[in-house]
Image 1 (cartoon, rainbow, N blue to C red):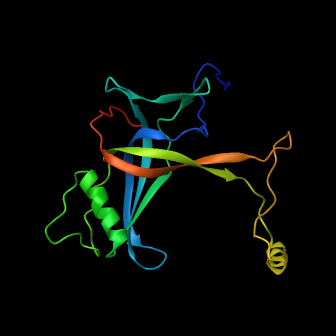
Image 2 (image 1 turned 30 degrees about the vertical axis):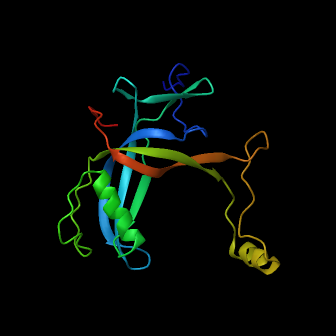
Image 3 (image 1 turned 45 degrees about the horizontal axis):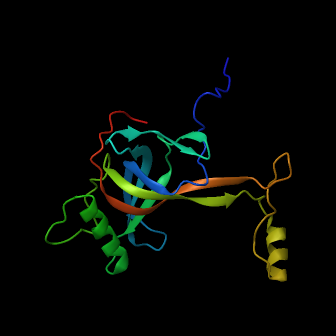
Length: 185
């Protein structure tokens, strides 16, 4: 019988999450962006955070509550391979990751995909998302006519409070991590 174990860490992401973490690239792909530009997409998972003694810690404590953060996935970074600031962002990322960059630069039609299993230190934070009801086409048209934003009404919990979730995002890559990741999450 499956029962909730109240002695273990919560699997939710806490709102007070911004900190330095160790993340690992678990998927990589290359293809066109929505605008047709060459795009590298990387998916990351949280491995934990590096304690002062150099060990990897899989949980954090916020407001006296323990949270299991290791294994959280669906954290993406996107790199558009075009000249200018977007392309420079990818080159800076490769430098921080200590990945090779050839003299000719990065081939924007067939780039090397060498990111999988890369372990990085990064600053992560959360983005608050208020869950909202879907709008019908008629409701969208009515809101447009009134000049109001196209947002459905908040979905409420049993106490009448809006349901809020948190999505993890990468604020900054700091560099390649030296922490040993000894298991898949």
